[in-house]
Image (cartoon, rainbow, N blue to C red):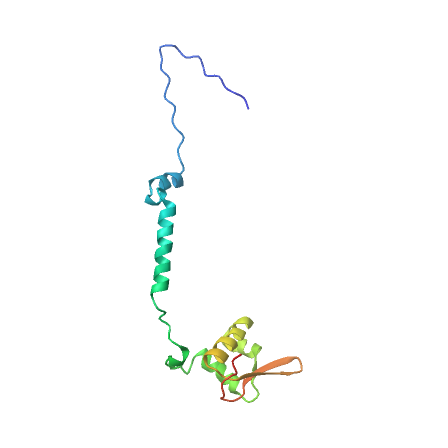
Length: 145
């Protein structure tokens, strides 16, 4: 790094004032924002207000027993999968994947979340050879663990 010496100037001439370096826009905005003065105080106040709201308002969710069952469309994927599961031989995950366009993990999640938990149906899996088939055994609710 070399240091450059200023050029010789006449003693009568005044030097131009140096220009201050520009601040980045983030620094400039932060300096003018009202949160920049007391960031911890505003964050703490917001946190306290969120906690107060969370603790003061009761949950709007009702119990699952009080929920009114919603009508199911006849052409939905849910009815299509339930019809496949109610067939005497049941169905495989691969068949459901082809019929719905879902991925394997989505079909398994549908079994656990909708069929077993929400609809409380008795879903049974049978393995014959290398294929596992799933079916709804009867209209008894599944046993919740």
